Image: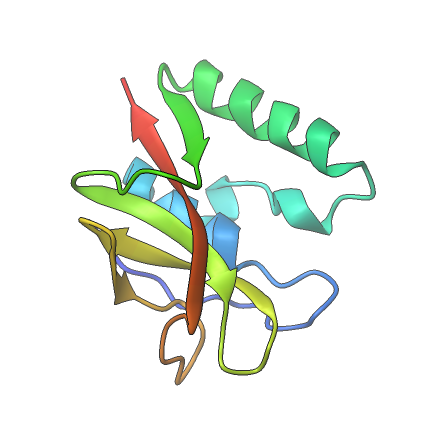
Length: 116
């Protein structure tokens, strides 16, 4: 898996989730994945868009705030700046922060994981 550094670190449209999902999907560059959270839709509409995107790639994406997924996932939560953020996790522990000079998450609120 290729690990990427996010290219947009703005609070309004940062692309940490896009960057992590590109790594999980094995893409050569994060630009092949839309920056879902920069959209103006509701969270429910964005989640549906993410699911449709993944289904077109013959995989399913799930979110859990209870269980720790085995293997690779995207951990989402709060970073040291108090900002909602996403990092790659392995067996529930942050393994890569796409933020330049990032140090992971202070609090994990949930995980996104893929199945085929």
